[in-house]
Amino acid sequence: MLVLPRLLALLASAGIMTGCAIGSDYRSPEIALSPAFLGQRAVDLRPVLRQADLTVWWAAFDDPLLTRFVSLVLEQNLDIAQAAARVAQSRAALRYADAVLLPAASVSANAARNYQSVETPLGQVLNATSGFDRSGNLYEANLGASWEIDVFGGLQRGREAARAAYEASEAGAVATRLAVTAQTADVYVTIRGLQARIAIARQQADTRRRLLDIVSLQYRKGVAAELQMNQAEGSLAQAQAQIPALEAGLDAAMNALDVLLGAQPGTHRSELAAVTPVPVAPGLAASGTPAEMIRRRPDLIAAERRLAAANARIGMAVSEYYPKFSLAALLGSSTAMASGNLFTGAASQAQGVLGLRWRLFDFGRVEAQIAASRGQEAEALAAYRLAVLQAAADVENALSALVKHEAQVGILTRGESSFARARDNSLAAYKGGVVSLIEVLDADSKLLQARDAKAQAQTDAARAAIASFRALGSGWDAPHASHNSLSDKLATNDYR
Image (cartoon, rainbow, N blue to C red; front, side, top):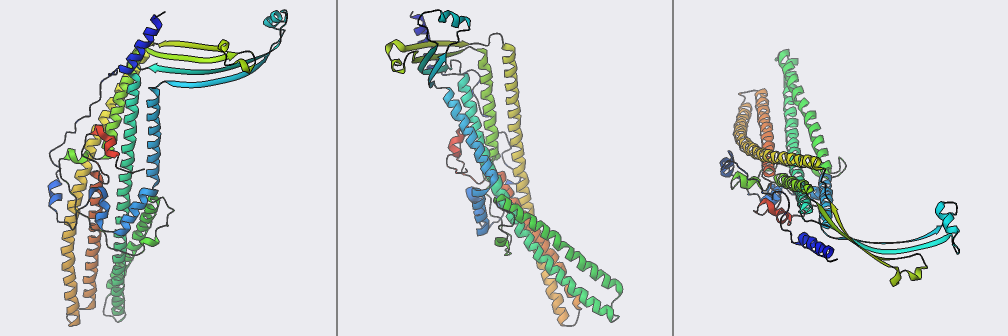
C-alpha cells in the first residue's frame, strides 16, 4: 500500500529538482569579422557640423519637420503596429509554455434527470423489480487536478524555445521600428532633394526660354540662322521635359511618406509645400570593431534568438524518447438523490491516478522529428551567419557611399563656384559690350546644371548617412551586453 505514495513522491521530487534537460544547452555563435570596416577610418576623419546621438540620430539633421515626422511614424505606422501584434502573440505563447510546467486544476458540476425505457433489456429487468421508478436524478460536483511531471526536461526545453521566440519577436519589432524610421528619413530627404531640383529645373527652363526669345528675334532680323533657333527650341524643350518627371517623383515620395505615417495620401502635403534645403548629414561615430558595432542590430539579435529557439526544439524532440509521467487527482461528491444529499459523507468520492505515456514502439517517428529539428537548427545557423555577412556588407556599402557622395559634393561645390565666376565674368563682359547676352545665358545655364548635380549629390550623401545609421542598428538604446541578455537590452525601449 505504501508503494504508490512513495512512487508519486519520487516522481514529484524529480519533477521539481531536475536541473538539466534533454538536449544540449545553447551557446551563442561567435561573430568573426575583420578588425575594422574598410571605410571606417574615412568616415571618422570626415569633417562634420554636428555629431549624432545614435539613439535619436534623426535629430542631428537639425530639421524640426523631419523630427516631427519620425515621432509621428513611431506612433502611427502600421508596420510597427503589426510587429507589436506579433510580439503580443509570442508573449502569449510564452505564458502558455510557462503554464504547462505547472499543475492544472478544474471544477466541474452537472445535474441530470433520466427517464428509463422499459422496452430495453435493462428496463425490462428493472420494471420487474418492485418499487421501480422510471425517473431518476443525478447530481455531481468535482474538483480535479493534473500535472505532467517534467522528469526529462522536454517541457522546459519548450519553455526555452517559447522564450527565445518571444525575444526574437521583440527584436523583430525593434528592427521594424528602425527600418521604418530610416525609410521615413530617406523619403523626407528625397522630397527635399526633388524640390530643390524642380526649382533649379524651372530656373533652367526660364533661362533657356530667354535664350530662345533672343535667338528668335535675331532670326527674324536675319542675324541668326534657322539652325540656331532650332537648337534653342530643342534646348528649351529638354529643360522643360525634366520638370514633369521630377514632379511625378515628388508626388510619389510625398504619397509614400503619408503611407508610412498611416495616413491617406495627400494628408501632409501642405506641410511639405515650403521648399527648404536638403538636410546636411551629421557625424557618424563608427567606433569599435565591426563585430561590436553590428552586434546591436536588432535583425541580427532576432536571427540569433531564432537559432536559440531551434536548438531548444531539438531537446523537445529528443525528450519524446523517454516516458512521460503525470499525476491526476479528483475530489468530489455525487448522488442520485435530492441535491441536499450532494455534499454529505456518503456522497463523497475521490480518485488518484499516476499516468504513464511512452512512445515505445514509435521511435521511427521520434527519430524523424529529431532529424527535422536538427535540420531546422542548421538552417537557422546558416541564416544567422548569412545575416552577419549581409550586415557587414550593408555597413561597408553605406560608409563607402557616404564618403564618396560627400566627396562628390565637395567637387561639385568647387565646380559651381567656377561656373558662378564664369557667369559673373560673362555678365560683366556683356555690360561692357564685349559679348552677347547669349553667352551670358549659356554661362547661367551651365551654372544651373552644376547646381542640379550638386543637389543630387547632397541628397545622395544624406541618404547614405541614413543608410549608415540603419546599417549600424542606430535608433535604440542597446546596452553593451551579450545576446543572451536580450530582455535587458530591450527593457528600456518603448517600441510598441
